[in-house]
Length: 185
Image 1 (tube, helix red, strand yellow):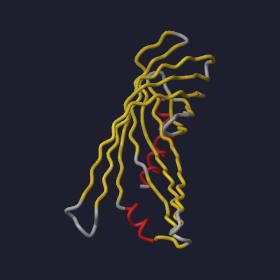
Image 2 (cartoon, rainbow, N blue to C red):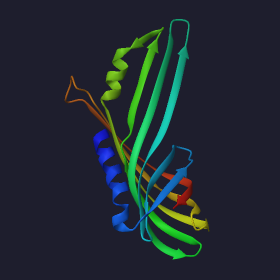
Image 3 (cartoon, one colour):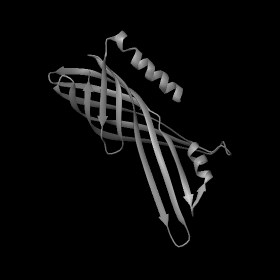
Image 4 (spheres, rainbow, N blue to C red):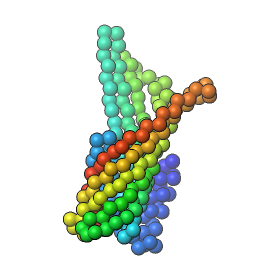
């Protein structure tokens, strides 16, 4: 997977002179996940890649045990924003991307690391995508602030390797809102 992301990023950066594009950078704070992306911008579209990150730490104590779980989520994504209307200084667009989350973590039970927890995490497979409608207000030729509303689709799979018949599948679809600060060079 790392090799694919590296190849896609290299193609994205190296193709800029061919398609007469400019550099684009965006930061998105949000309720669900925060992220940043970079990509190539031209008058019709922006194509980009980026990374979102999240982590959690859960601690449980009672008279018999002391447990702690630490989880980290890295979610690389690639996507494109297609401009559909322009009336200076406002532009509207359709934003589409796909993402592949990776989960890392460990569990500690009474001071001892639970080695089976990492194995269980490796059995999880998640893919997703999102599509939204965005409006950007350009307060300078290189800077804009945007608002987006859309739907995020996710597919979660847990497959037991010892029992090939056992498989959990969950589809989680939810709407999202995002505010972005965008820089175009």
